[in-house]
Length: 202
Image 1: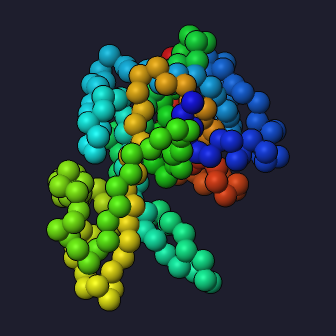
Image 2: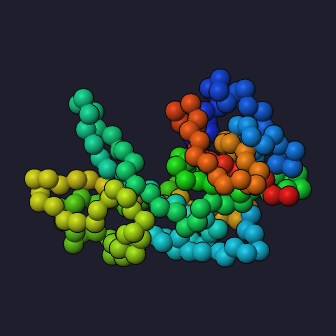
């Protein structure tokens, strides 16, 4: 299964336990909902190739993490990401489909994820394909800068590629919107909750 947000972690939370699984065709618009279905490719959508691994997909996300140290503990912190599109469609067999908007969402999956690593003091060691991808999508990056530093100020980075293929099963937690009004930013109280909105298609 694919997971949009940390679904397995959220499932133990009272916040999520109180949200029943909804059917897209009959879901309550204007509330937090949970849906389960499969990723589908709409007629107007084109199948694309993921930038790092060249896999065919309807949607991909590239996440950039930096190794940081805090209170004698090292961990990976997400500092930037970019997507192929604003979102993807999900079909749960109810007769309608939902557009899942992923801006600001946490995207996780089970299984193997393609990752590249790089230290900023040696630009020549960066994988050629990774370098090309970062240069191509430079305008989409808000915090990460592709630049070489001295060894003394070197930073460690990790680049992860998440690929969404047609037919993949997903769980989605988020806010349901009819799409009749312009999308509004909504920040849910639960820390790791998906800040996504699903536009219900007629």
